[in-house]
Each structure stands twice: as structure tokens, then as C-alpha cells.
Image 1: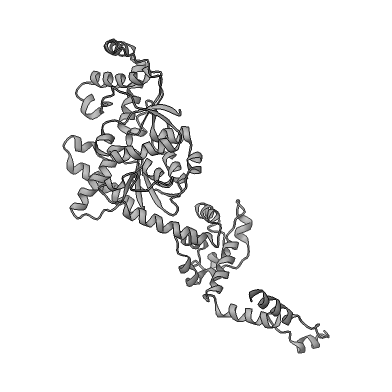
Image 2 (image 1 turned 120 degrees about the horizontal axis):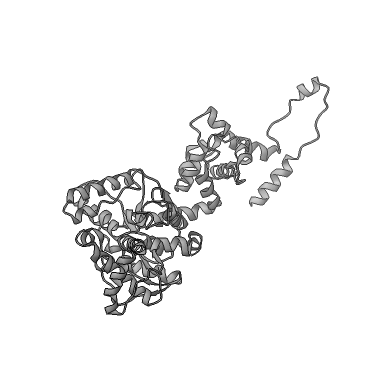
Length: 441
């Protein structure tokens, strides 16, 4: 579905126009033809409307969908609540033919008719199932390399089944795949599937709402995430606005929060100012600053290594327990050294000297199913260390001897003579030294 109606809902245009802005930018960049239709109302929201009058809930939802049907389109919404309302109404009215007939009798006064034959998609669902993570990644110009991002789905994007069915309701992965396509590292955390708790604010349970926000934000923070990404304006409100309230109360929470389209727009080269990130209550400056610094780290690393292979190696770690050295010396963890390089700590790796424990036995390379191995990386690290004067003195001395003599040791003539061995031919050390020094000059 590349041409569709967009249903913004109430919350995004009214409270978070920057989410609308970034979503419009992403639609444009991905070549979507988007229609905004007149006559739409609140979806309506379930807690506040359905609890009062279920019939009003289904009537208003059907009317909104009938407007889309009349235009001959499907609908995409960036709001979990709107998505859930529409999917629930579509599921309910598909089986309740009497209720559908009663509602259509009302809609006839506006020359509308709801048949239920339209496609209803969430923005994240559209990205995952229509655009695809691979296609999205191909459009990234400023990858979120080195950034650690935690994902919050929100309840109504995934449940209840069978009304909603596009990802596993208890173990979803599709938004993570989109975030990974932007170049970020997805951070897993214990409360990933916990509700944001924002609905408690709507029924006067303020402290309960803050407790939900506090719990998840602390969890994300403890896992070292650089940001939390959401796909729901209500969840954004809970983790951005309510986090700001916790900060005003001097609580130790500091997790930048992004709507998914904002991260995509940044990765596609749009500036923070263009998409209005200054509208967030919790500043995103720490994320942007670190992202820019990590881009510099990647550039420096790319001068010496194939960064894509390092990332692939770090994400796999199938050979973690295969290195013969780490079985004898547990202080040597080659996988940790790869991770340190990706974290921008090249100078630290070279200075620490652990890299010299690599035996270059090539066990990792032979066992690597991707034929990468780490031996080549450690060989390059050793060369860099020697260039910077950070290698073992014994290695420098041996190389000096090689330049002088073309060999790393002199034969013991007495031992050779004892065994009846004659003198060796004259060596070519001088020639080697001339070749190598001439190359450097």
C-alpha cells in the first residue's frame, strides 16, 4: 500500500506536531502518496468513550473508516490507540452484522457506508510489511552507528488478537528490525513488554502512572540505552512528559525519547531542527552529540578495518569460547576487544596490550561460519600498536635485528659443527635492510 489516507488522530496534531512533521518527512522520502480526508473525528479513544457508550464507540469508528472507504483508499495511522480502535471495530463489526446494519443506517444520512473492506495499517506495520527493513536501510545516509536504542511497542499495537495480528503479541521483533536497519544496536530489557501505564492518568491515578514510567525508564537506563523509541503518541507522552515531571522532582532519570519516524528522519539526513526535536520535554541533545561523536569514531575505525565485518563479528560471538588462550587466561577475551573497537576505544585497546595475547593460531577463522575470524583484526591491531610505539619491547628489538641481518637469530656454529654440518651460505640481511629502508624513504 503506497497510496493511502493518513489518520493522525487527536493527540499528535494537538500535542506533538513534531511527530507529525517527522512522519510526513518519512512518507515523502519513502515515496508514499498520502491523502488527508475531511470529516474525521476522534477515532474514538476506548477508555473515555467506550466505557460510556459502546454503541457510540463503534459508530464513530465506523464513520471514520467509511470516509476512507468512500475515497477508495486504505488507511495508515501513526497512533496505537487509533489503530487499536479501528482494528477492534473492524473485527467486531465483521461478525456483528446487525450492529453493522444499524450503524450503516445512521451513516446513510451522510451518504456514507461501512463495508469493512479497507486495509488498516499502523505506521510501524506499514514500514515493516510494505516498505521493509532492508529497503528502509538502503535509504539511510547517516546511520545510527554505535547508538544503543531500546524499543517500546505499546500494548495496542500488538493486542488483542485476533483483531490485531501483525507481530507476535508477546515477543515482537519487527520494530527492532526497523531500528537495526537504521544502524543502531537494539537493547533488550526486562520490562520491554510492560504497558507504559499512561491510561492511569486519564482516570485520575497520577501516582500509578508515574510509577509505570519510572519503572521502565530506570530499566532502560540501567541497560545503558542511549534512547527509548516508541510508536505511540500516548506512550511518548508517558515517557517524555512524565519523565520531565520526574526530573523536576529531582529523580535520576535521563532517557531521551523518540517517536520512530524521528529516528528514521535523522538517519535519512534530516536535521534535528527541521523535524522539531526541540519540542521534546526531555532534551535529545545527549543522543545527538553522542551520535555525532560515534560517526567520527566509525570514520577513524574505517581507516584501518572493515567496520561492517566488525559489526557482524560482534553481533555473532559464536566463537566466544573457542579461543585457546582465553581457556588458559580468562583475562583475555577477544570478543570484548572487538566490542571495545566498536565502542570507539581503539586507543585504549592499543594501550592495554591484551591484543598481544592472540597467538594467531587461526582457530577462530577456521571455525567462523562467516569466514571472518578475528585473527586478521588482531594482526592489524598489532601493526597499529607498533606504529604508535605501544608494542612489547621484545617485538621492536626483534624487528631491529631483522632489519640488520635479515634473520631473527644467529646460528650456533659450534652446535652445527658438532653435528657435522658445514657453514651456511652468506645471508642477505643487508639487501633486505636496503629494500625496506628505501621503501620508507
